[in-house]
Image (cartoon, rainbow, N blue to C red; front, side):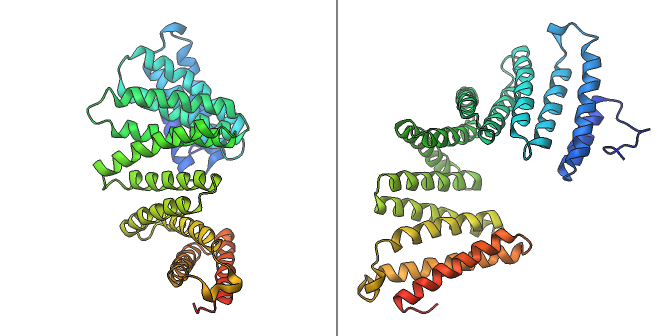
Length: 332
């Protein structure tokens, strides 16, 4: 079997090949999916050869973008460079589509997503400058879209994703001023969005990530209290998202991560040799955070016991908690 079809049943249209590839990709059969996406490109090439090259039908452009995007997904985890190459080709065709259907919102939104994925692929293959360019373009496109629609929040949310990624890239490059300006803009937009749409969990969670970034910048400034406050704000938001989706391993792991950052920061302010003299409220806060993090890590490990990393993280949490109890004389 190749793809969803035997050798006598290969897809005979680009649409069926793309549909087959998407189903296989969703099922994790990337090798077979890749064959179908390549078949789609072959069929589209034949259609393209029958038309003036500078006047390709929108359906051919759409098909090429879909097939190239599918191919990028097939190779993304193994070969980021090849994934980026596929995505840049897809961007080329999507730009032609946008130029041919001026003011068509969804085509421009698709272009934003392609630039974001290309940026992620470039990060994974050490092409940071190309990644910076991709996210910069995505920010400009999302900003223009948000100004052109009655409800701008969908496009503003995409803009915040690109702002965060671009901020990360500048931070890794030690460009602290540029990084913080991007993080601040991202934070302001997300704060406004969550106040306007508090029921949108993706906005709330994104704001919690923005607080985490704020915490990281405060750590760089050696402002422990400000960093702790930022992580506490993140925790409060993540408690809310987990309450809405209590079975979410993703939200549980994120909350545990923020709690562990608070534990790390607050532990540094305690002299464990004389912990009995430490502020009792601070010790109790640490105690509660340790126990909450342990419960979350146990839940995650139980939910997916075959994933060794979860058990290793849980073991590390137990060890940290044991050291805390040993140093303070408290009981878990």
